[in-house]
Structure formats: C-alpha cells, structure tokens
Image 1: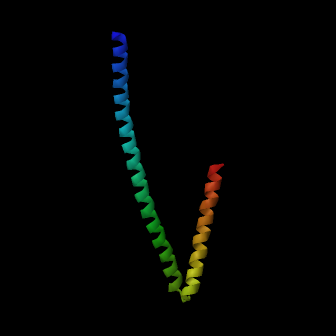
Image 2 (image 1 turned 45 degrees about the horizontal axis):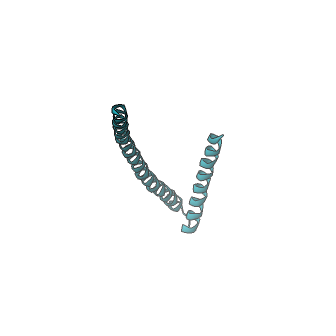
Image 3 (image 1 turned 45 degrees about the vertical axis):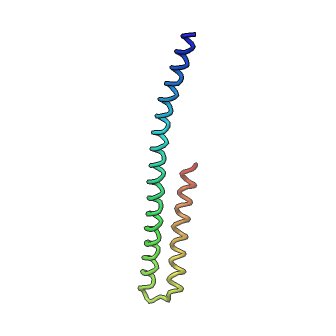
Length: 92
C-alpha cells in the first residue's frame, strides 16, 4: 500500500512539473504570435505607404490620377506575381 501511495505522489509531482512547463511554453508561444501579428500589421502599413509613394511618383510626372492608379496597380500586381513565383520555387 505504501508503494502505491509513493507512486501516486510521484505521478502528481510529475504532472505538476509538466503543467508548469506547459504553461510557460504556452506563454512564450502566445507572446511570439502577438509579436508576429504586430509585425504583420506594421508591414502591411509600410506596404500601403510604399504603394502610395509609387502612386505619387507616377502622379508627379504629368499623368492623370486614373493612369497613375492604373500603373501603380500594375507595378503592385507584378511585385505580387514575383513574390508568388518565389514562394512556389521555395516550396519545391
């Protein structure tokens, strides 16, 4: 009976230690995900400013706003296509 009690106490101590380690791991993972989300939002804002700068650059040369928006869209789509091609190449 004493060995069964010792086994049960050892099992509970192991579960307590693993539970603490699990909580610490979950906290670190949550922090990393939070930082990635903030970085993604900042990158999205930076990309938006970059596209706006391209638009203003096209508008600076005597070009109507509609055509400047068109060429900005073409440049942005070309960049997205290059990134997709790089992702496809890296996935192989």
